[in-house]
View 1 (tube, helix red, strand yellow):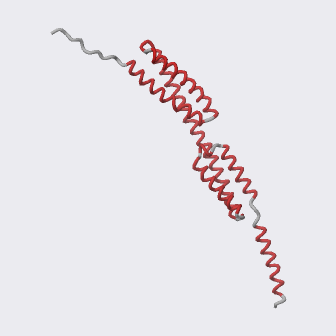
View 2: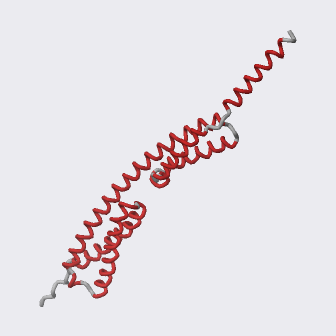
View 3: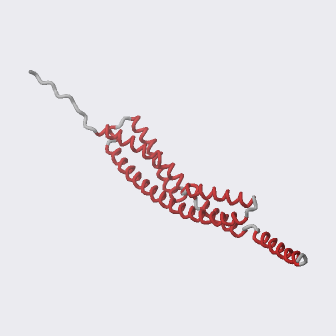
Length: 197
């Protein structure tokens, strides 16, 4: 029996060695697919338009890379599959978020343009009542608002973050002028004339 034992042990050890080394290859295909999906998510703007999904995806990438470094290839393979799924979700969420933000900015831009046109008409109607300083301020603000609206129209197509920044101060400027015009157009109350008694 002693003679058979080494004959059985050697093939078992060889088979076990093949299993260990055969299954322990790095998951390069999964890693590449995950990195490609992460690149697409970043290109879609997931960091700006799907921040929570991007954060979860980034944490999963770090976990998968740590597993690769530790040569835990089985876990790394599963992690890279998860990273790919998370990156795909982040890319979809980014596209959805970007579309929603674009629609909101276009709506806001349309409302501000309408308010601006209405305000210009009101200013023309009361221009004679305006003091020289008010006219000077109006002219300066008019140039700023017109430039801001023009830049925002371009930015809505090219860079939504810039469009948002361009639109932010315009609303406050229009509010200020609408309030000033309300004061200018308000009827002046005159005290009743004192009659002779």
